[in-house]
Length: 296
Image (cartoon, rainbow, N blue to C red; front, side):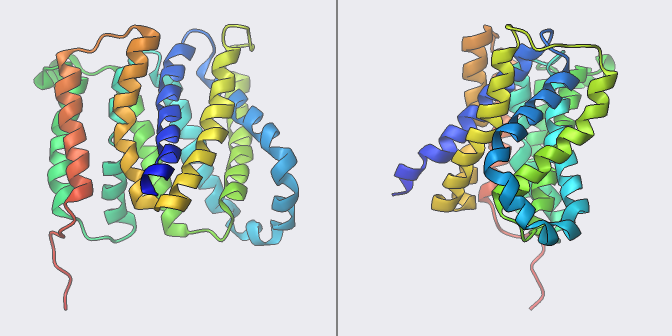
């Protein structure tokens, strides 16, 4: 039965990996501020016929939580995806996918801070390993050169985007808002549209064209709506902990799609740095023993 339902999280992760490549493909074809705005605007318009009325009926329940919903929209919809689009200008899709694979580990680390969850040996050992792997990856196989020649700016932006989304997941769990998942998503989308409108107006004019329309449709429909349907079904049938395991396939899928669609080369530092990072993430998820035992 678990194997039967694994198609849901597997499909969601595959779409998200494809969206990383789409972000890279959009560089040069459309302004990051424009695709960020158009993406959520289109997703909001598609969902409105299905969700506007039920959300409006719940307005009194929703109203007290609007400040928290605004923070969630800022982190998950605005910062994460906008920074990823800006990162794509200088970072490769392969590197972006591997940096994003740190998300489960960062979620565990931030949970220790915001949810007062005691740290485990997995988060400690996994964190050190993942940091080493990240230095190898960003330093292109020579970690010490980071201090001499600096880093690719896009890699830093992607790391910041990953931290923002990890914090989004932690706050989503911490606040546990009494709002249905689809209603919450719908509210975040429209708040993101409002937040992204000023940057869209200030950015250089970037119209929708025949070249960038397929990328926009993928981001708005596949990555924003279909992936959510698949992921929510996966969590519903398998549980959050089992579904989250599939996120470890994200960097692998991203590399495969980037090589096939963009012709990106996979270098030894990708394999070494990405492999060490992934091992660190896996250890963080597997080693659950707490460093400090709770008082009896």
